[in-house]
Image (cartoon, rainbow, N blue to C red; front, side):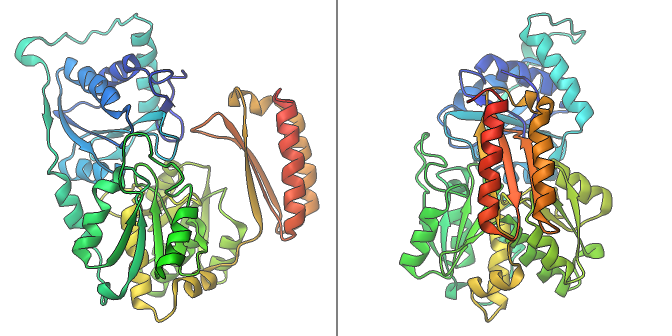
Length: 450
């Protein structure tokens, strides 16, 4: 596998591309570059999680650093604990990917995202270790100098308390919400959060078995959530992904509320209460043009970044921005750590509904009107060759010029999968489908898939 960091850590098929020896070597490299006293390690519900966690912890402890193993835990909870304790963090999760995949995310001391320089240094050392050419000058710890692993499944309770104390609901028992845990890490936390709040929560996809994470459920498959909201007559539905750092919602009429609409809702609410610093929001280039149009009408500016939550958080940090996020449902509020937190975002959405006399459908429809947008994912053998396929980009520029002021085309390589993303926006929906179809066929032809 490519032992380089994508937009969200290192990923691959567990035991095929992401093998235990990779996790072992990465644990050693993380210890060398991030080690202070101890590491916090967590994972989602995938069957391969314990295997990779064992190898990773062996690598860290072999370098003389301790590990506090938190078991199954959401990524944002792990990052929050890292910030609270000032420790580096490692999360084993492939987020929204199918269960056979897995990944390893590293966070620096305090739960901060790694800088590019640190990632490159870890990558270099990782290649050396995997090639068997370790020429490190680090002494080899033995005896009492070896690190130890401690299991601590109670630490997460503080995170639940923090979530509940940050939210104020005047009438929690009157809110009926369906909660889709994606059979992932949220299954261990979200039920308790909503129980303590006193919200009328109907739980689905909260029985993980190691193989059903994200399977026809969760933020990437909200059909089940929409069906359940309509059947139960609920006010709202919320869905998380495998490691609970994303939120996708469903209104009371069964309509999907994606990350763009959520950002519009949150930004408008914060601005109305004077809490949106500089009236700016950080988003990626994938956000719908309707978001720019809607927030611009309210005097709110968008700061655009490349895809990836780290790019969003970098912009937030450099400009002091209060709110940022992605269409995929990564929503980041300026808190103790700049990490997307699906459960926290869901609670903030409940606050908005609790304060309003309007339904979730009415609120989301007023927040923004989407410009027709279609994204097609094209599976390819090697996404790295995309920049050299000039014909694809030349044709995309020609088509974009035909779409007019509110038309846009983006073609990019995924940072987490071997896929090319083709995105087209325009006010004429039928033309959007035509352009996507043409460009998809062109990508398949030029990337050697015809």
